[in-house]
Length: 230
Image 1 (tube, helix red, strand yellow):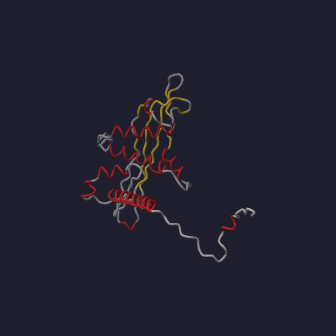
Image 2 (spheres, one colour):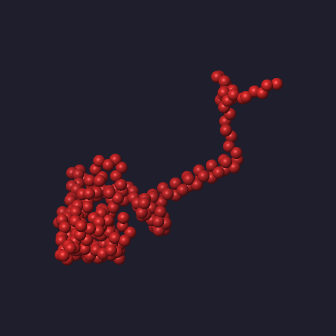
Image 3 (cartoon, one colour):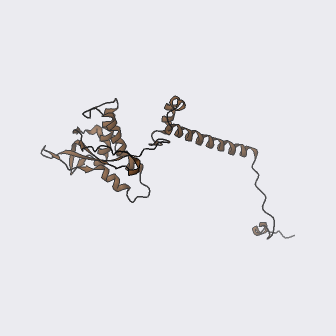
């Protein structure tokens, strides 16, 4: 008797044949799938609950679990708004910096102002997916500094003041670099200009007072300020 070779096309269902058999999951596979789904749903629910407590008005639950909520939300998932009472910013802050550099003969040169905020705005405009750093990093750094230097003369008013100064300085130095015009950076100074955003006429709100440009004192720059910067 001659041997025959199976043709794969013979295994295809004939036209008009019924549907293929439905795959049946084994009990262990179903248990794994159900457990994975429960973990995903539970994790998602916990995360959404923590974000809700973060933006909701203060209550006994949010006060009791504030350290755990902050540990989950900060810094990647911060929500800079309040549930039920959103209050948009009513002023635009423009931050600029300039540096003093050391020449070859030991003389120092004061360089022109560099518009740090203007650079961020230029990177955001026309970009369909602008980075979080371009949108918020510099502004939040200034908010951090301003909130910790709220004394009458702009002096320290909180324990995190030195950290705020170092944070603001390192952000600027990361963008400016170690040298300007081929000369080493010795000092840096900041200037902030605030532009009021007039509220709509129907709001009944008065515009915030206009603030004059503010210049910070010169800060020394050393190698430690560049540690860890790209």
